[in-house]
Image 1: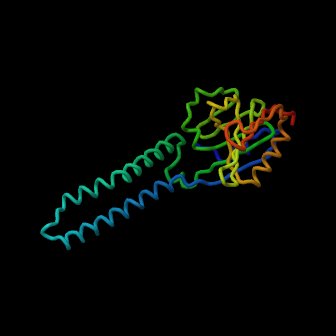
Image 2 (image 1 turned 180 degrees about the horizontal axis):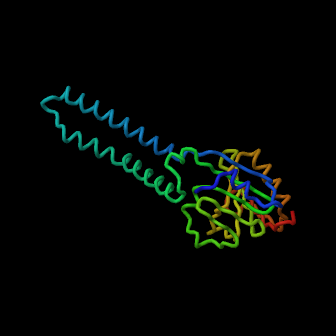
Image 3 (image 1 turned 45 degrees about the horizontal axis):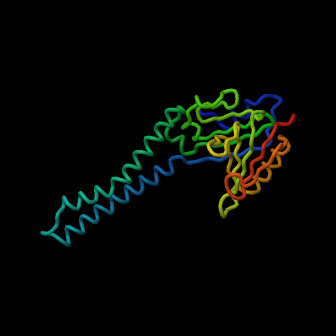
Length: 225
């Protein structure tokens, strides 16, 4: 069963303090329902179209040809619908939840004085064997990292937007390494998080423009906080 925000908070050790948190509800079924609505709309329009063609063309009306055209046009949305349905079904099996529970799926991030704890469906796609369990523990949709193992904090700003990205690396390789510990936020939250991180880490080196314009790579070492 997927752990909730409150359950994770209640399991923190007595000497562990929450310094920053981010939480929201995500409707994983929204895309599926959107495609389903379009399919129903398409079927309704197709029936009306067939009826109008029959009324206008009458003797020249080729029912099977027009039906084949409509079926061909519906293959893509129908394929998207079943692909998304199967994807959601797999998620429910991995998390041992009901399909309707994905309507209000909880995503969150908790930064304590010791760990970075993050819940996301993203972690269900990972090959757990690739990650060192001593550095990052992944349990279904939950990832937990010890701050002592963080080597680089990489930040960047969204193109033409006030959205900021903060990524944490255990082992930094700017050309091949993908960060699985990350947060996306608006500027007020970003400023609060960065201020908090400066209290937790000492910056040993700083690089700007390492991958893209305006980014920042901070080489860090955990303080005794």
